[in-house]
Image 1 (cartoon, rainbow, N blue to C red):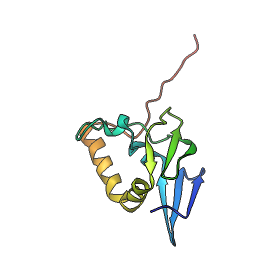
Image 2: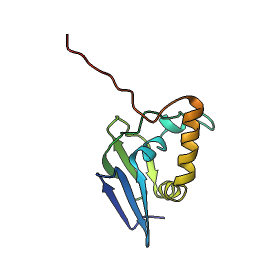
Image 3: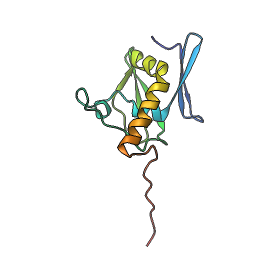
Image 4: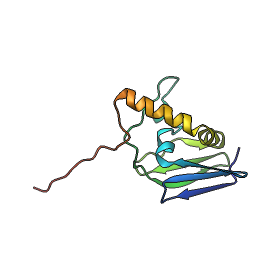
Length: 123
């Protein structure tokens, strides 16, 4: 399914997709950790890489990929993976269960949504 409208909501850090009368909001962090790229999904079944520290990631821009997908560019340098219309609709309609699964996997791995902060000190 192709959305009727796509809006970037900078204040709430969400991508809003509208299908008919139904609106869905996908947070930037959610989109980043569920990127369809090989970097995230891996190169085969069961080879995915759990993404952590992405809570504050920002979507910098959206680029069309033909008539079938979007390329999302994030401020952590991630810009690979094409979000085709079918995958975006899947993320919209399964957001809650995917998010719950992601949080459980993070906890099991002892990882966090928070990004590592480095404190610099002038000498």
